[in-house]
Image (cartoon, rainbow, N blue to C red; front, side, top):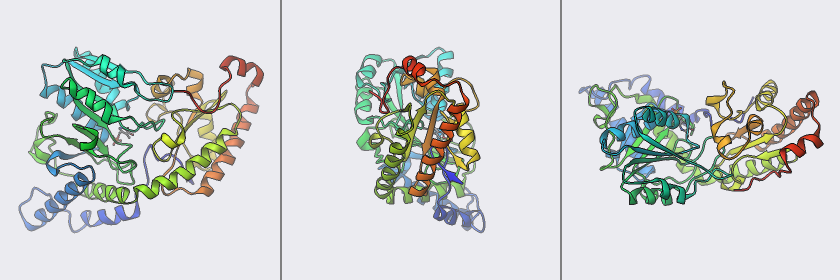
Length: 398
Ligand SMILES: *Cc1c(COP(=O)(O)O)cnc(C)c1O
Protein backbone atom coordinates (compact mmCIF):
# COMPACT_ATOMS: atom_id res chain seq x y z
CA UNK A 1 0.00 0.00 0.00
CA UNK A 2 1.30 3.46 -0.89
CA UNK A 3 -0.03 6.14 1.48
CA UNK A 4 0.00 9.65 -0.04
CA UNK A 5 -2.70 11.15 2.21
CA UNK A 6 -0.61 12.57 5.04
CA UNK A 7 -2.43 15.93 5.17
CA UNK A 8 -5.47 13.92 6.24
CA UNK A 9 -3.68 11.96 8.94
CA UNK A 10 -0.28 10.33 9.38
CA UNK A 11 0.95 6.96 10.63
CA UNK A 12 2.41 6.96 14.15
CA UNK A 13 6.16 7.29 14.35
CA UNK A 14 7.39 4.02 15.97
CA UNK A 15 9.18 5.99 18.72
CA UNK A 16 5.92 7.79 19.54
CA UNK A 17 4.18 4.46 20.09
CA UNK A 18 7.06 3.32 22.34
CA UNK A 19 6.83 6.52 24.41
CA UNK A 20 3.08 6.08 24.86
CA UNK A 21 2.95 2.39 25.81
CA UNK A 22 3.94 2.72 29.51
CA UNK A 23 1.04 5.14 30.02
CA UNK A 24 -1.44 2.51 28.85
CA UNK A 25 0.13 0.00 31.27
CA UNK A 26 1.80 0.60 34.65
CA UNK A 27 1.76 4.39 34.52
CA UNK A 28 -2.01 4.61 34.01
CA UNK A 29 -2.91 6.89 36.93
CA UNK A 30 -5.02 10.04 36.92
CA UNK A 31 -2.70 13.09 37.10
CA UNK A 32 -5.08 14.71 39.61
CA UNK A 33 -4.61 11.88 42.15
CA UNK A 34 -2.40 12.72 45.10
CA UNK A 35 -0.72 9.33 45.49
CA UNK A 36 2.67 8.57 43.99
CA UNK A 37 1.24 7.05 40.82
CA UNK A 38 -0.86 10.16 40.25
CA UNK A 39 2.14 12.39 40.81
CA UNK A 40 4.09 10.34 38.30
CA UNK A 41 1.41 10.94 35.65
CA UNK A 42 1.19 14.61 36.60
CA UNK A 43 4.95 15.05 36.22
CA UNK A 44 4.87 13.34 32.83
CA UNK A 45 2.11 15.70 31.63
CA UNK A 46 4.05 18.72 32.92
CA UNK A 47 7.17 17.60 31.08
CA UNK A 48 5.22 17.06 27.87
CA UNK A 49 3.66 20.51 28.18
CA UNK A 50 7.06 22.07 28.80
CA UNK A 51 8.62 20.36 25.83
CA UNK A 52 5.88 21.38 23.36
CA UNK A 53 5.84 24.93 24.78
CA UNK A 54 9.58 25.16 24.26
CA UNK A 55 9.23 23.98 20.64
CA UNK A 56 6.95 26.94 19.85
CA UNK A 57 8.78 29.42 22.11
CA UNK A 58 5.92 29.69 24.61
CA UNK A 59 5.61 29.46 28.38
CA UNK A 60 4.06 26.18 29.65
CA UNK A 61 1.45 28.32 31.43
CA UNK A 62 0.23 29.36 27.99
CA UNK A 63 -0.43 25.89 26.57
CA UNK A 64 -3.33 23.52 27.23
CA UNK A 65 -4.17 20.12 25.82
CA UNK A 66 -7.42 19.55 23.93
CA UNK A 67 -8.83 16.75 21.79
CA UNK A 68 -7.37 18.24 18.60
CA UNK A 69 -7.33 21.21 16.29
CA UNK A 70 -11.12 21.27 15.82
CA UNK A 71 -11.68 21.74 19.54
CA UNK A 72 -8.83 24.26 19.78
CA UNK A 73 -10.27 26.32 16.92
CA UNK A 74 -13.68 26.33 18.63
CA UNK A 75 -12.22 27.30 22.00
CA UNK A 76 -9.97 29.98 20.50
CA UNK A 77 -12.71 31.76 18.56
CA UNK A 78 -15.88 31.11 20.57
CA UNK A 79 -14.02 31.53 23.88
CA UNK A 80 -12.39 34.79 22.76
CA UNK A 81 -15.79 36.13 21.67
CA UNK A 82 -16.94 35.57 25.25
CA UNK A 83 -13.87 37.23 26.77
CA UNK A 84 -14.38 40.30 24.59
CA UNK A 85 -18.16 40.73 24.39
CA UNK A 86 -18.04 44.38 23.37
CA UNK A 87 -16.43 43.53 20.01
CA UNK A 88 -18.74 41.89 17.47
CA UNK A 89 -16.67 41.39 14.31
CA UNK A 90 -14.70 38.31 13.24
CA UNK A 91 -12.20 38.06 10.37
CA UNK A 92 -11.18 34.73 8.84
CA UNK A 93 -9.84 33.74 5.43
CA UNK A 94 -11.84 32.05 2.69
CA UNK A 95 -9.55 29.00 2.87
CA UNK A 96 -9.91 28.02 6.54
CA UNK A 97 -10.51 24.47 7.73
CA UNK A 98 -14.20 23.50 8.07
CA UNK A 99 -14.00 23.85 11.85
CA UNK A 100 -13.17 27.57 11.56
CA UNK A 101 -15.61 28.15 8.68
CA UNK A 102 -18.45 26.62 10.69
CA UNK A 103 -17.58 28.47 13.91
CA UNK A 104 -17.82 31.67 11.86
CA UNK A 105 -21.22 30.59 10.50
CA UNK A 106 -22.47 30.02 14.03
CA UNK A 107 -21.33 33.44 15.22
CA UNK A 108 -22.92 35.01 12.15
CA UNK A 109 -26.25 33.42 13.11
CA UNK A 110 -25.80 34.90 16.58
CA UNK A 111 -25.54 38.38 15.08
CA UNK A 112 -21.77 38.77 14.63
CA UNK A 113 -20.34 40.40 11.55
CA UNK A 114 -17.99 38.04 9.70
CA UNK A 115 -15.44 38.99 7.03
CA UNK A 116 -13.98 36.20 4.90
CA UNK A 117 -10.79 37.50 3.28
CA UNK A 118 -10.39 36.45 -0.35
CA UNK A 119 -7.16 34.85 -1.61
CA UNK A 120 -5.32 35.18 -4.91
CA UNK A 121 -4.91 32.51 -7.59
CA UNK A 122 -2.27 30.67 -5.54
CA UNK A 123 -4.09 31.01 -2.21
CA UNK A 124 -2.26 33.98 -0.66
CA UNK A 125 -4.07 36.64 1.37
CA UNK A 126 -3.35 40.23 0.41
CA UNK A 127 -2.47 42.09 3.66
CA UNK A 128 -4.24 45.19 2.29
CA UNK A 129 -7.51 43.24 2.30
CA UNK A 130 -7.03 42.69 6.04
CA UNK A 131 -6.17 46.36 6.63
CA UNK A 132 -9.35 47.37 4.83
CA UNK A 133 -11.60 44.90 6.66
CA UNK A 134 -10.39 45.37 10.23
CA UNK A 135 -11.82 47.94 12.64
CA UNK A 136 -12.17 48.62 16.38
CA UNK A 137 -15.03 46.12 16.55
CA UNK A 138 -12.87 43.14 15.43
CA UNK A 139 -12.29 40.80 18.39
CA UNK A 140 -10.16 38.24 16.56
CA UNK A 141 -8.49 37.59 13.24
CA UNK A 142 -8.14 33.86 12.52
CA UNK A 143 -5.92 32.78 9.63
CA UNK A 144 -4.75 29.26 8.84
CA UNK A 145 -0.93 29.02 8.76
CA UNK A 146 -0.42 26.18 6.27
CA UNK A 147 -3.46 25.20 4.22
CA UNK A 148 -4.42 21.51 4.33
CA UNK A 149 -5.45 21.28 0.66
CA UNK A 150 -3.10 23.42 -1.40
CA UNK A 151 -0.22 23.82 1.07
CA UNK A 152 -0.06 27.61 0.80
CA UNK A 153 1.75 29.24 3.75
CA UNK A 154 0.58 32.67 4.90
CA UNK A 155 2.87 35.43 6.14
CA UNK A 156 1.50 35.51 9.68
CA UNK A 157 3.98 38.11 10.92
CA UNK A 158 2.62 40.74 8.54
CA UNK A 159 -1.01 39.77 9.17
CA UNK A 160 -0.70 39.69 12.98
CA UNK A 161 0.85 43.17 12.99
CA UNK A 162 -2.17 44.55 11.14
CA UNK A 163 -4.51 42.80 13.60
CA UNK A 164 -2.68 44.25 16.60
CA UNK A 165 -2.83 47.80 15.26
CA UNK A 166 -6.59 47.65 15.79
CA UNK A 167 -6.40 45.79 19.09
CA UNK A 168 -7.70 42.53 17.60
CA UNK A 169 -6.31 39.21 18.82
CA UNK A 170 -4.56 37.03 16.27
CA UNK A 171 -5.33 33.31 16.11
CA UNK A 172 -3.84 30.77 13.71
CA UNK A 173 -4.78 27.21 12.89
CA UNK A 174 -1.32 25.63 12.82
CA UNK A 175 -2.44 22.00 12.54
CA UNK A 176 -0.58 21.52 9.26
CA UNK A 177 2.47 23.65 10.00
CA UNK A 178 3.60 22.52 13.46
CA UNK A 179 6.70 20.38 13.07
CA UNK A 180 6.84 20.92 9.30
CA UNK A 181 7.98 24.54 9.10
CA UNK A 182 9.36 26.86 11.79
CA UNK A 183 6.63 28.01 14.17
CA UNK A 184 7.57 30.53 16.83
CA UNK A 185 4.69 32.36 18.54
CA UNK A 186 6.81 35.38 19.49
CA UNK A 187 8.40 35.85 16.08
CA UNK A 188 5.08 35.50 14.29
CA UNK A 189 3.13 37.70 16.73
CA UNK A 190 0.62 34.95 17.57
CA UNK A 191 -1.89 35.35 20.43
CA UNK A 192 -3.62 32.00 20.03
CA UNK A 193 -2.71 28.89 18.02
CA UNK A 194 -4.36 25.52 17.43
CA UNK A 195 -2.50 22.23 16.98
CA UNK A 196 -3.03 18.51 16.81
CA UNK A 197 -0.74 15.50 17.00
CA UNK A 198 -2.04 13.26 14.24
CA UNK A 199 -0.77 15.43 11.36
CA UNK A 200 2.83 14.95 12.52
CA UNK A 201 3.01 11.21 13.25
CA UNK A 202 1.41 11.49 16.68
CA UNK A 203 -1.85 9.92 17.91
CA UNK A 204 -5.37 11.06 17.01
CA UNK A 205 -7.67 12.74 19.51
CA UNK A 206 -5.04 14.96 21.12
CA UNK A 207 -4.03 18.51 20.36
CA UNK A 208 -3.27 21.80 21.97
CA UNK A 209 -4.17 25.44 22.23
CA UNK A 210 -1.58 28.13 22.82
CA UNK A 211 -2.88 31.41 24.23
CA UNK A 212 -1.06 34.45 25.55
CA UNK A 213 -1.22 35.74 29.06
CA UNK A 214 -3.44 38.65 28.01
CA UNK A 215 -5.41 36.77 25.35
CA UNK A 216 -7.17 34.08 27.32
CA UNK A 217 -10.40 32.73 25.86
CA UNK A 218 -13.23 31.79 28.22
CA UNK A 219 -13.64 28.02 28.70
CA UNK A 220 -16.54 26.42 26.84
CA UNK A 221 -17.16 23.48 29.19
CA UNK A 222 -17.69 23.30 32.94
CA UNK A 223 -16.04 20.70 35.17
CA UNK A 224 -12.98 20.26 37.35
CA UNK A 225 -10.15 22.81 36.98
CA UNK A 226 -7.82 20.77 34.72
CA UNK A 227 -5.71 22.45 32.02
CA UNK A 228 -5.28 25.85 33.66
CA UNK A 229 -9.02 25.81 34.42
CA UNK A 230 -9.77 26.11 30.72
CA UNK A 231 -10.56 22.59 29.61
CA UNK A 232 -12.10 20.25 32.20
CA UNK A 233 -11.90 16.44 32.13
CA UNK A 234 -9.29 13.84 33.01
CA UNK A 235 -6.25 14.30 30.80
CA UNK A 236 -5.52 11.97 27.89
CA UNK A 237 -2.13 11.06 29.38
CA UNK A 238 -0.90 8.58 26.71
CA UNK A 239 -2.03 11.01 24.01
CA UNK A 240 -0.23 13.91 25.64
CA UNK A 241 2.99 11.89 25.95
CA UNK A 242 2.68 10.82 22.29
CA UNK A 243 2.00 14.38 21.16
CA UNK A 244 5.12 15.69 22.91
CA UNK A 245 7.27 12.89 21.50
CA UNK A 246 5.91 13.53 17.98
CA UNK A 247 6.69 17.26 18.23
CA UNK A 248 10.16 16.53 19.59
CA UNK A 249 10.97 14.20 16.67
CA UNK A 250 9.41 16.49 14.04
CA UNK A 251 11.32 19.55 15.23
CA UNK A 252 14.57 17.58 15.57
CA UNK A 253 14.26 16.24 11.99
CA UNK A 254 12.54 19.25 10.41
CA UNK A 255 15.39 20.51 8.22
CA UNK A 256 16.21 17.02 6.99
CA UNK A 257 12.55 16.13 6.30
CA UNK A 258 12.06 19.37 4.38
CA UNK A 259 14.98 18.68 2.04
CA UNK A 260 13.90 15.07 1.58
CA UNK A 261 10.26 15.94 0.85
CA UNK A 262 11.28 18.67 -1.60
CA UNK A 263 13.08 16.07 -3.69
CA UNK A 264 10.05 13.77 -3.67
CA UNK A 265 7.57 16.53 -4.46
CA UNK A 266 9.54 18.12 -7.26
CA UNK A 267 9.85 14.73 -8.97
CA UNK A 268 6.12 14.10 -8.46
CA UNK A 269 5.24 17.54 -9.87
CA UNK A 270 7.51 16.97 -12.84
CA UNK A 271 6.01 13.54 -13.53
CA UNK A 272 2.39 14.67 -13.22
CA UNK A 273 2.97 17.79 -15.33
CA UNK A 274 3.65 15.44 -18.27
CA UNK A 275 0.00 14.38 -18.18
CA UNK A 276 -1.81 16.55 -20.77
CA UNK A 277 -4.32 19.09 -19.45
CA UNK A 278 -3.06 18.95 -15.87
CA UNK A 279 -2.98 22.05 -13.67
CA UNK A 280 -1.23 22.66 -10.38
CA UNK A 281 -3.53 24.04 -7.67
CA UNK A 282 -1.80 26.40 -5.24
CA UNK A 283 1.70 27.90 -5.17
CA UNK A 284 4.78 26.40 -6.87
CA UNK A 285 6.13 23.31 -5.04
CA UNK A 286 9.05 25.14 -3.36
CA UNK A 287 6.69 27.58 -1.59
CA UNK A 288 4.29 24.97 -0.20
CA UNK A 289 4.07 22.96 2.99
CA UNK A 290 6.67 20.19 2.63
CA UNK A 291 5.05 17.11 1.13
CA UNK A 292 1.90 18.71 -0.29
CA UNK A 293 0.86 18.72 -3.96
CA UNK A 294 -2.58 19.30 -5.47
CA UNK A 295 -3.38 18.99 -9.16
CA UNK A 296 -6.41 18.99 -11.41
CA UNK A 297 -6.57 16.53 -14.28
CA UNK A 298 -9.12 18.18 -16.53
CA UNK A 299 -12.20 16.41 -17.94
CA UNK A 300 -12.32 13.64 -15.31
CA UNK A 301 -13.64 13.44 -11.77
CA UNK A 302 -11.11 13.52 -8.95
CA UNK A 303 -13.29 10.96 -7.21
CA UNK A 304 -12.90 8.54 -10.13
CA UNK A 305 -9.11 8.96 -10.10
CA UNK A 306 -9.08 8.36 -6.34
CA UNK A 307 -11.10 5.13 -6.65
CA UNK A 308 -8.95 3.82 -9.50
CA UNK A 309 -5.74 4.64 -7.63
CA UNK A 310 -7.20 2.99 -4.54
CA UNK A 311 -7.76 -0.22 -6.56
CA UNK A 312 -4.04 0.00 -7.39
CA UNK A 313 -3.22 0.25 -3.66
CA UNK A 314 -2.49 3.98 -3.69
CA UNK A 315 -4.18 6.29 -1.15
CA UNK A 316 -4.75 9.92 -2.14
CA UNK A 317 -7.48 12.43 -1.52
CA UNK A 318 -9.81 14.33 -3.83
CA UNK A 319 -10.44 17.90 -2.80
CA UNK A 320 -10.72 17.95 0.96
CA UNK A 321 -11.33 14.88 3.06
CA UNK A 322 -14.12 16.57 4.97
CA UNK A 323 -16.11 17.39 1.87
CA UNK A 324 -15.29 14.16 0.03
CA UNK A 325 -18.76 12.78 0.69
CA UNK A 326 -20.55 15.81 -0.70
CA UNK A 327 -21.04 17.08 -4.21
CA UNK A 328 -20.17 20.72 -3.56
CA UNK A 329 -16.58 21.26 -4.62
CA UNK A 330 -13.96 22.25 -2.07
CA UNK A 331 -14.34 25.90 -1.07
CA UNK A 332 -10.54 26.21 -0.90
CA UNK A 333 -10.30 25.34 -4.59
CA UNK A 334 -13.15 27.60 -5.67
CA UNK A 335 -11.58 30.40 -3.59
CA UNK A 336 -8.42 30.28 -5.73
CA UNK A 337 -10.59 30.68 -8.80
CA UNK A 338 -11.20 27.14 -10.00
CA UNK A 339 -14.53 26.61 -11.74
CA UNK A 340 -16.59 23.65 -10.48
CA UNK A 341 -15.38 21.34 -13.23
CA UNK A 342 -11.75 22.06 -12.36
CA UNK A 343 -12.31 21.68 -8.62
CA UNK A 344 -14.02 18.33 -9.16
CA UNK A 345 -10.95 17.05 -11.01
CA UNK A 346 -8.58 17.88 -8.13
CA UNK A 347 -6.38 15.30 -6.46
CA UNK A 348 -4.23 15.93 -3.42
CA UNK A 349 -1.02 13.99 -2.94
CA UNK A 350 0.44 14.49 0.54
CA UNK A 351 3.69 12.78 1.42
CA UNK A 352 5.59 12.22 4.64
CA UNK A 353 9.11 11.23 5.68
CA UNK A 354 8.03 7.60 5.45
CA UNK A 355 7.44 7.77 1.68
CA UNK A 356 10.14 6.93 -0.89
CA UNK A 357 11.21 8.00 -4.37
CA UNK A 358 10.27 4.53 -5.65
CA UNK A 359 6.72 5.13 -4.42
CA UNK A 360 6.70 8.48 -6.23
CA UNK A 361 7.71 6.76 -9.49
CA UNK A 362 4.97 4.14 -9.04
CA UNK A 363 2.36 6.81 -8.35
CA UNK A 364 3.37 8.80 -11.44
CA UNK A 365 3.11 5.70 -13.64
CA UNK A 366 -0.20 4.55 -12.14
CA UNK A 367 -1.73 8.03 -12.28
CA UNK A 368 -0.83 8.35 -15.96
CA UNK A 369 -2.40 4.96 -16.59
CA UNK A 370 -5.60 5.83 -14.68
CA UNK A 371 -6.01 9.23 -16.35
CA UNK A 372 -5.59 7.69 -19.79
CA UNK A 373 -8.12 4.99 -18.97
CA UNK A 374 -10.70 7.41 -17.61
CA UNK A 375 -10.30 9.85 -20.47
CA UNK A 376 -10.70 7.01 -22.97
CA UNK A 377 -14.02 6.20 -21.31
CA UNK A 378 -15.43 9.73 -21.57
CA UNK A 379 -16.47 11.70 -24.62
CA UNK A 380 -13.18 13.57 -24.47
CA UNK A 381 -12.45 15.87 -27.39
CA UNK A 382 -9.25 17.73 -26.49
CA UNK A 383 -9.65 20.47 -29.11
CA UNK A 384 -13.18 21.25 -28.04
CA UNK A 385 -12.32 21.16 -24.34
CA UNK A 386 -9.13 23.20 -24.69
CA UNK A 387 -11.15 25.99 -26.23
CA UNK A 388 -13.70 25.96 -23.43
CA UNK A 389 -11.21 25.84 -20.57
CA UNK A 390 -8.80 28.27 -22.21
CA UNK A 391 -5.12 27.67 -22.75
CA UNK A 392 -3.90 26.94 -19.25
CA UNK A 393 -0.39 25.96 -18.24
CA UNK A 394 0.61 23.69 -15.35
CA UNK A 395 1.66 26.52 -13.03
CA UNK A 396 -0.97 28.96 -11.79
CA UNK A 397 -0.75 32.73 -11.72
CA UNK A 398 -1.19 34.55 -8.41
C1 LIG B 1 -6.78 18.28 10.37
C2 LIG B 1 -6.99 19.72 10.53
C3 LIG B 1 -7.85 20.24 11.49
C4 LIG B 1 -8.68 19.35 12.38
O1 LIG B 1 -7.89 18.70 13.30
P1 LIG B 1 -8.46 17.52 14.24
O2 LIG B 1 -7.35 17.29 15.19
O3 LIG B 1 -8.71 16.38 13.33
O4 LIG B 1 -9.67 18.06 14.90
C5 LIG B 1 -7.96 21.59 11.61
N1 LIG B 1 -7.26 22.42 10.81
C6 LIG B 1 -6.42 21.97 9.86
C7 LIG B 1 -5.67 22.95 9.02
C8 LIG B 1 -6.26 20.61 9.69
O5 LIG B 1 -5.45 20.16 8.73
